[in-house]
Image (cartoon, rainbow, N blue to C red; front, side, top):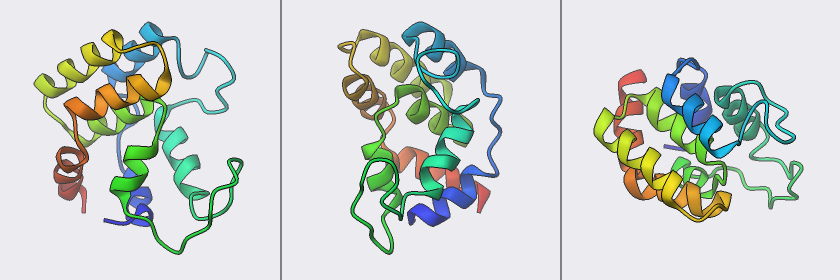
Length: 133
């Protein structure tokens, strides 16, 4: 799956998942904390993916296509990573493990995001996203 396909699928997902909001509150990351310019993690994903193939605000190298797995593995916002897994339908067990792992990780977004991904690798998210195709 490419990043453009991931964008299409993210637009179909429900943004009202409950656990990622709890993770935002626990980590104090997301809407209502800091300088978040998005109201939901779905909006965060859509904004990020819309500009992914441009230099964007991060001065990225422009490419024609990028595998969605690469995008997932580059995200450094733990609630953002967690929301995609939750909204795609990853089961409660791995979600619970990812939630706890994020809380137990060092208090840096990179560490917390990596902890979520160790509990919920891209292949699990992609398998669930396939049901939305």
